[in-house]
Length: 452
Ligand SMILES: Cc1cc2nc3c(=O)[nH]c(=O)nc-3n(C[C@H](O)[C@H](O)[C@H](O)COP(=O)(O)OP(=O)(O)OC[C@H]3O[C@@H](n4cnc5c(N)ncnc54)[C@H](O)[C@@H]3O)c2cc1C
Image 1 (cartoon, rainbow, N blue to C red):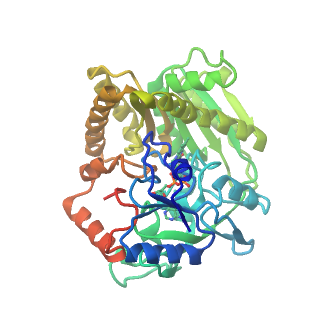
Image 2: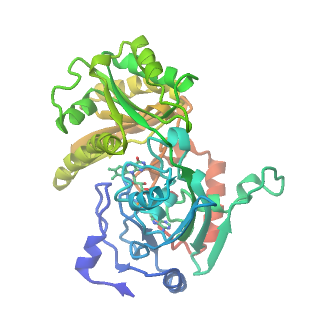
Image 3: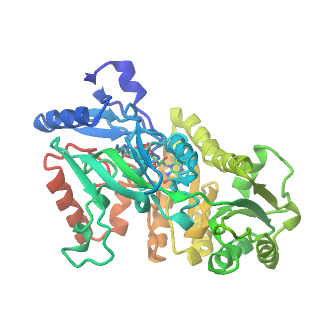
């Protein structure tokens, strides 16, 4: 059941964090009963178990050098789609992108859309509460989980369903809905072996617009205005700085928007029966000095996929550059902080100033501006530069917290960001989290080193 083969162990030793941790054994259960049996045995022998899906974690959450790495990839059945109830039941190892296409065949939308959706699993997306560009409209994965079956550390299987109550005053708020405990718990509280996810009607007509701006400042002002407008209906509002723009150019049209400092990508998805507000978008873009002649329009599914490919090229390019520095002790350093969306321009200016003061090359900054959530990606050439960058990131995170922000908006804490958890969580919050962990996993076997 557990492989100790060196080659197999090495296959599961890396994710996208740039760390390499070789597990002592690898288990690849085929069903929930096998997961439960493995956990019962591990709990009895105090052997650590770290669940893993697609291993696209950027925080080292899905790798370990302690005990067993439990890959859930073999559990990839779509159990049932209920078109009337708009829900789908799946095993955790199904790739999110594949599941979205299956649902789309029924004219239903599975909303969570991390950029990594073609490589990440449903279980991993639930365990990280993944979100994406379209979370501006649809919210993160948490909002779409109706029920979970979870294997607890002692090997028992529990079925949990969200209450469908609209009013409830029974018990402490955090205890009222046990489904929520496991979403975003990064494999530390239980292993998701089945999930029921809510689906939405597929929007009738979506258009994407890539809008270049002469000045970055105006791009931020445009994002705030678009978010607060009643004339347009964005389901995503994504910002790309000059460096991200140059990576985007390299994927195709190298002369696109040469006069621009930044661009904003929006998707407009009006309610059914209403046309996309193209004129309103143009008027809004004009107000903020956009280079509307260079605006790109993506209309139709194939065209939107192309926009997504360009978007994906940015983290993929940075991951490749980071991986190439691994032999020198360097890697990509990705931040995942967020601030209230009106504070984004200010936070990015401060983040850049802190890097400049430390003599660090500027990061690529892109991402979910509508949610005040950029990704600031540095490349550390070697170990010495890595620690200098980490100091800059920590200084940035302190300012982010002061602006009412978070140190990790969608990638979770994993192992890499654990040191920054106390910047945001009070000692009281940390004590409550430890008490929950102790109750659900008293022997501490689940995903040691993640989160706490
Ligand atoms: C290019 C790129 C782009 C990305 N873009 C985004 C983005 O836009 N938004 C976003 O949110 N994230 C993004 N990520 C991060 C990552 O892809 C997501 O967090 C993803 O949801 C992780 O899924 P996974 O299957 O790869 O999980 P893994 O990396 O395998 O695991 C992640 C965590 O989940 C736990 N886990 C996995 N399966 C289970 C299970 N069945 N039960 C319990 N715990 C489990 C693991 O222990 C680990 O703690 C990106 C990553 C890359 C490489």
